[in-house]
Amino acid sequence: MNLGLLHKYLGDLIASGTDPKLPVILPPGEYEDNPQELTAAMLVTGPYDGDPSPKMSAYTSRSGAALLLSGQRFDIDSLRESHNLAWPPVDAPEPNRCN
Image (cartoon, rainbow, N blue to C red):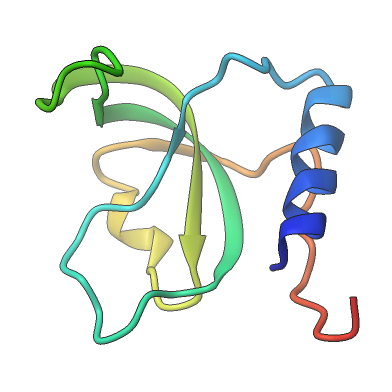
């Protein structure tokens, strides 16, 4: 997904009624050999590590709703036991190499 598609997608989510203050999180797990291009979005409810303040380097454990953005190699099923999963009201765009 390119920056323009991400911008449009996030705007469409907010326009559909998704809370603009919803935290945006990345999936847990080991780093892959290379960074992954963003390809999917899922609404999740459950525990996550949050940033308590822009001035602090530590993270705090939080729990609640969040928008999970992930790459093509992340297996969303790995969260089914610890989180409630729901598809966002707007589908994430398919990567388009022409735009």
